[in-house]
Amino acid sequence: MGMSQSYGVPNDTESIATIHRALELGLDFFDTAEAYGPFVNEDLLGRALRGRRDRAVIATKFGFRIEDGKINGTDSRPEHIRAAAEASLRRLQTDYIDLFYQHRVDPNVPMEDVAGAVGDLVRAGKVRYFGLSEAGEKNIRRAHATHSVSALQSEYSLWERNLEPEIIPVLRELGIGLVPFSPLGRGFLTGTVKRAEEYPEGDYRRGDPRFQGANFDANMRAASLVQEIARNKGVKPGQIALAWLLHRGEDIVPIPGTKRRSYLEENIAAASIQLEPGEVSQLDQALAPDAVSGPRYNERMMSMVDR
Image (cartoon, rainbow, N blue to C red; front, side, top):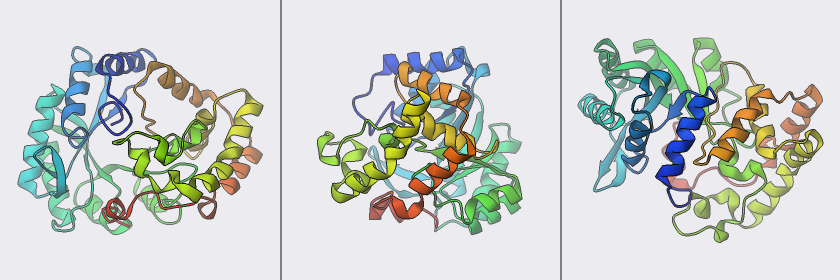
């Protein structure tokens, strides 16, 4: 997403070089969505993977109503899902999507209808696997009962632990993988962030409650342990945050976003970092849910999360 919106000025040349470098380093799972841009990020990924499609696993998403270049609510009616799939296939320059997520639960469409429509696409060979994003326990179960759900994408990181009480146990019960987005806390856990007002207009972090005012100060204190452990190990704070996630289980595959080769290489190196049990315990306590200040979304965006 960050290659096309929300985090600074896009640079397609560097973004495509970053995707190519990822393939060289053995990273093959790429996450996009029709809503990113909208549409332009799928197009970017399609161009980047031209001639390399067989080396990549592509995940994309459907489920928003996009009008005049803007998101205007949800739409997961079966006919819309079919149309969205065809459009994504064209932009991605491929004849199949590996993992097709419902981007947000649509309260106006029964989950059984959504899962059934994606199941039809699977049987037609246009989609390989079905995923959900930010879905709650009831809808995960309803979807999985209709067509096997392979993955749930949701925000999960050292400083966003809302999945632990109920969602992760359900995923493990059903054999569904977890794909955490924003595993670096939208950059907060890298130790290089600024206050909300220091970001330019159009940057997502300018409106993020956790980057604002007293929340920012409290969260900087909570995240200081990540920096301390990183210094002790001679690595970067963001690498510690990713290593923590990778220690949570083999069914958890984080997707750190970057548009630069240098950060990509840092992120991949996190897979080789070993955390001691005591370090994991320290991190768990320092960034426990009650230690992080502010909601993860504003009220409008939070209303679209199925919790």
